[in-house]
Length: 119
Image: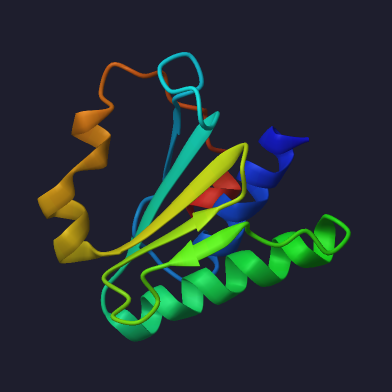
C-alpha cells in the first residue's frame, strides 16, 4: 500500500509543480521510513499548494489517512510530511539545491516514477 500512496503523492505534486519529483528508497539504509519523496516549488505559496494537494489526495484515496506530522509550514521553505512508511519533503527550489537530499542519499535506489506523474 505504501508504494501506491507514494506514487499518489508524486502525482499530486506533479499537478501543482513542473519541478522534478524524486522517490528515494531509504528503507534498507534508514530504520524509520521506507521512502523519501522529494519535490519542490518555485516559491512559498507553491510549496503550500503542493503540500495541501498531497495531503488532500492521500486523505481522499486512503480512507482519511493524514500525515503523522507536518513541519515547516510556517515559512514553507522545507515542509516535511511524515506518513510513517514514507516522508514527503517539499522544498522551495533554492532550499532543495542547498540541502541536496538527492546527493546525500545518492547511494539509495530510486523508485521509478511513471511518466504521467512527471508531466
